[in-house]
Length: 301
Image 1 (tube, rainbow, N blue to C red):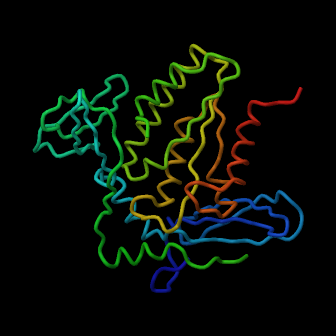
Image 2 (image 1 turned 60 degrees about the vertical axis):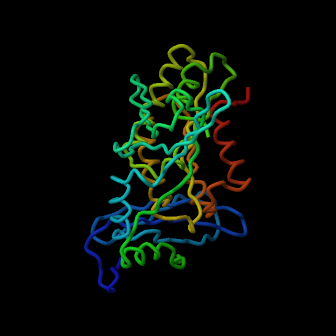
Image 3 (image 1 turned 30 degrees about the vertical axis):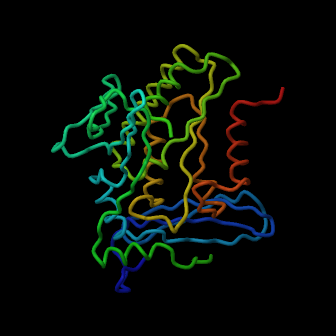
């Protein structure tokens, strides 16, 4: 790998995607990338089918671009904001909500002590805090970048090289759901957390894990499927929704749910292999996700 001056890099950290595909067979598979941390990489593939294959390797983000993404990801709570709607009787008011709001105005604080979930809204003009009824995402603030940083992030897609419910409600529904042999709970979490710092996402995952354990304690026959994140459009605002965030969040999901009796559907692997880059994958990808999920629970006699 070479840096922006054309000289060999002596360090790693680049975000690389690799796939093999045979267009005539309509077959494809993702590859594994090993970073030797010295500017060189090894790309390996498992050959699932015979015949000729094409190899595609894509530098999605350079290590220099990753540093920019990581800097803002770790500390920026302002990229995702929400509007809360407060209703009492015939009166309705709205107010800005978020994970961390300035304390220069009166706040409504919503805290769930048992799992550490916390959210705030600016107190509405007249209605009480407990009249909060709904929240919706209203604004994604893109952090300001220096000109050089913006240019660096714009280099994420060179040519191929050939060769609405709240988290507490979700947690409660998991913990009290199930109870039958023919019930399967499917959890897909991640895309909407990309604008938030990783600590927020990891705390959510830990609470989901605890909710699953509570479910299994009273209903061990209930099945649980964890769907990992898939990739999304390359035209997306990178400082908010970069696929690097999704890749890192998938690593967190694998770690948090490691050792649990859950079925893991690797949607990332499927969409990288299919080269779809769509937040809502096409029918072919979705049918494959369903097939993998069902394979854990549906067996022929």
